Image 1 (cartoon, rainbow, N blue to C red):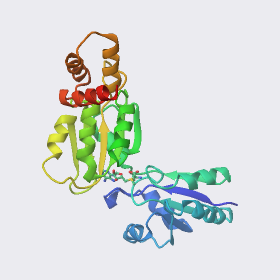
Image 2: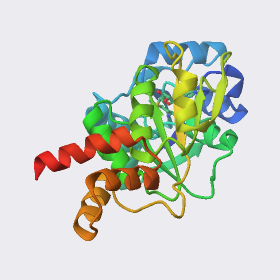
Image 3: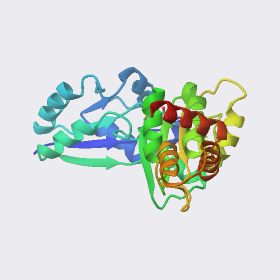
Image 4: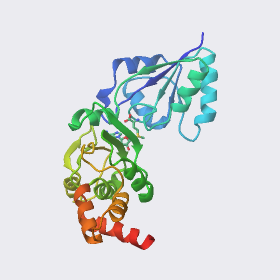
Length: 277
Ligand code: SAM
């Protein structure tokens, strides 16, 4: 009889968010694979769970997966946890789960907290469909490229962001998606300084500009309006230049209005375009 791999969600800040089933499964497992064993030991101690821990993180995923598969094949049932929330959601685990499935080993979810779902559940933005893109790229170029691909998305866009990059990301969002777009920013969910900001992108910038932003953050960007133009600001500038007799000044004004972004930002884009031609 092979063992079972239990993928167990753990709290994202509030220890009371542990489920009864999660405690029992972790107690009964032969071994718990955890991202950071020292970090997880504190959670396990809190619940009096004495099960041994083994590290499983992005740097040893491949080698460790083979070891864990060998234990499962020998009949041991194991649990997989991450530092917080649901494993595999912007966290390690996918390779192990995939390897278990390929090896015919049963994988069972022990569901619980996830920052993504918690934020969506309280933001008041459409949740019938949403698009999760994990962490926004840390570098401005990659982030802007991603936002240009996403800005016309008709679903809520969800992403994780580091606090020290929030303002830079909001600036890029305003430039590419428009200052009037709805946004919700969930900070420190389930913790003492929990905050849910909800408003427009321009208001969010104003709200968070006051001082250093701290804590863990989920950004939810509302869907683009049905009337939102398809394509990027640059593409629209190019299109109007080719298809109309409007001057650059008029084109910039029109594109800024269509996209709901600052005229100065569109003007800068138009200069790049003109220099490139
Ligand atoms: N697997 C986790 C989950 O299911 O939520 C996410 C892991 S990811 C490495 C960590 C990121 O999730 C943080 O940087 C932050 O963006 C978000 N996050 C985690 N806990 C949070 C919280 N309490 N409030 C807001 N965002 C949180």
